[in-house]
Image (cartoon, rainbow, N blue to C red; front, side, top):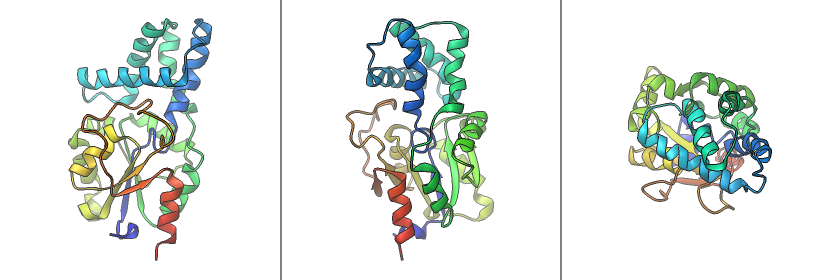
Length: 240
């Protein structure tokens, strides 16, 4: 099936379009240095973040990624001896406004929007996705968040709700392609639900899963596999 036979691209935002790993490291690094933990590597920071998120998915399923961030910070602070001041706890959540887009995200989304309807499908809340959409120069035709669904990916309910929001446009399952970096949150479940999936393997030159939880089912083989969003955009643009 050709890329342009799809009509709707649904996007994981955090980790696929927005470089949350750099955003988290940028926030934690000064606090770690202030606490005398300048020895921490980026990978240690990201693995701690991922482990904390994994535990919270088990303990509080359905809570948005944004609402998890203060709890994730407290877990990381206890592990690394960081400040537990409320301003620092809340600061991780507020730092979302400063999380950078990947270098290719903005132009790639402009290209893809010429050919597809673009939907944000995020475990974050509405405020966070609006902030990230600003960073991305407002590429989305519609936005679906964990706050709307009252549940988080990888729960299949998220995908059902998302398809329901687009039903007014008459789209069928074969019209969709889900585009994501996270094997845990997105690729595995979307593939199981019958979506065409495009894996943007942002960490293709790095070992492990970084700031994302390890997928229980292992690495799912996608329908399309790119290392950047620019590659997906170029493939769609060049397709006859």
